[in-house]
Length: 105
Image 1 (cartoon, rainbow, N blue to C red):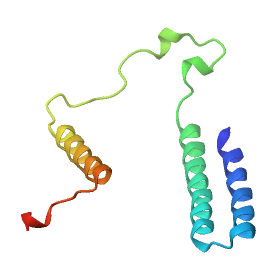
Image 2: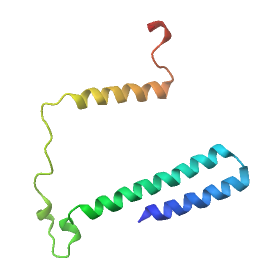
Image 3: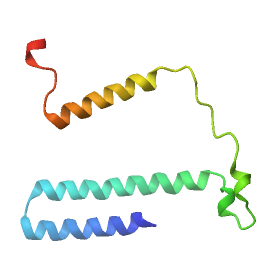
Image 4: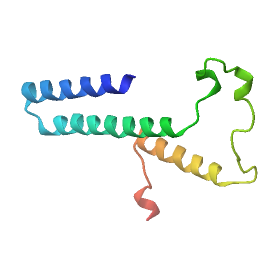
């Protein structure tokens, strides 16, 4: 698992960064990254335990046993289009530096 190694690296990098730079902003950002690794690892650990074992993870499992319906996806929903459009406009706004020009207000 990569998360414990990443967490250990970030803790070490946080300590070294503090002693080298004495910068509270970067140290706090690295400490929050450690917290994010802890949250992600906690989620993956408990979600993986609750989910059924996939056929590919069992010794006698076959690939075709994992095929079939994954879930229900509504074919008539328009909200993914609008959410995607809003996300694209936001990303372009952050990328090129404009956001709702002052002349519009």
